[in-house]
Length: 165
Figure 1 (tube, rainbow, N blue to C red):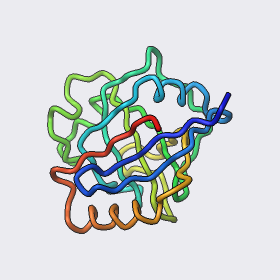
Figure 2: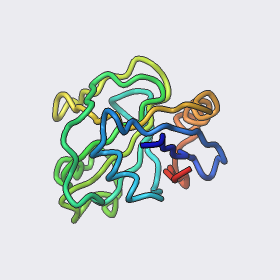
Figure 3: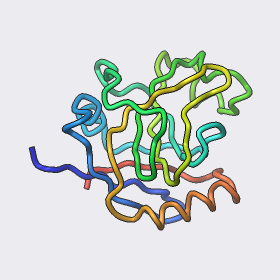
Figure 4: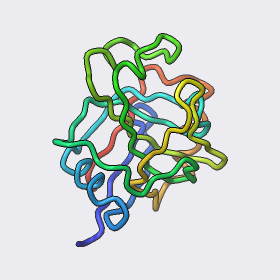
């Protein structure tokens, strides 16, 4: 199979990076994401994992991928896939608006890690392994600057998008 690439964008800020899908390490996850593209939703900056931005989506795979190519210590440039139930994310302490999680049996979290020293542990649930399905190959420096700006200036009105390249 030829290499496949996605563009990851912060749309309002006009910043993007290019990521290579890790079809050899996470084939089921890559296939599910690829078939669902394009995807875009409100962006959030992590509270617990540190240097992470992510968006939440309704389940889009016929069957959720197995935990292939897992990590609890993502590195800069990792794209990760997480699955949660609406009840796991539905408490007010997470700050999600009702439409983001309520009524969805499964919520998919697609994340980009942009800097070092990340640890996927949550005070409510413990370790949260993610599936590494892609790695940024171009533009991580620009995206990291925009992510820092998002952390300081806020995420309201910003969209995180994933598109086939």
